[in-house]
Image (cartoon, rainbow, N blue to C red; front, top):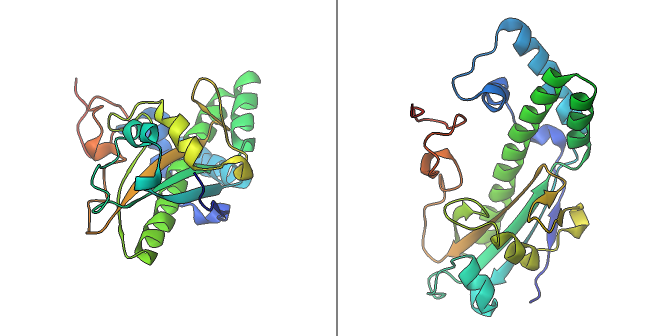
Length: 227
């Protein structure tokens, strides 16, 4: 299976994260920071932006040419006339932020570590959105339409799908590797795939909170948490 791998290295400042996002990933969707905590969060977010080295790599494949185990493992459409292509994507913030989080925790600076980690989650979310925007533009160059993002652990896609994604995309150029546990290294990395359709297809919320099955998740946006 051969396909060109496209590597893009966004500037850290291209990733948009708000203090509200940092607060949500720190203490849940109902958490509100006081003035002192917000001031600290602003400083930590700036620190996090200076620590990251964002990069993404993606490749586009003809679904009909993929091995059967990949097609079944990713639950790809059988009708390749209507859904002819798929893009696999892997993106990362690099290892430095995660190292700083670990060091903060080990040296007793737990609050800073928690805020750094929350900022990293927000930055990775923004990188995922930016990565999807590049793939959506790529679909249009084929006169196709990007569908929803999906990936290992989301929307009933098993974690074993990581193996298929990493067989589709060569992530060594951005320094991301898949461990035997199916967890990516560096930890602040994200993988997903997008099917390209011949007709406009829903592409908005399938990767995020509004269609996630975890309705009792404390980080959920736009829905009340079940008691």
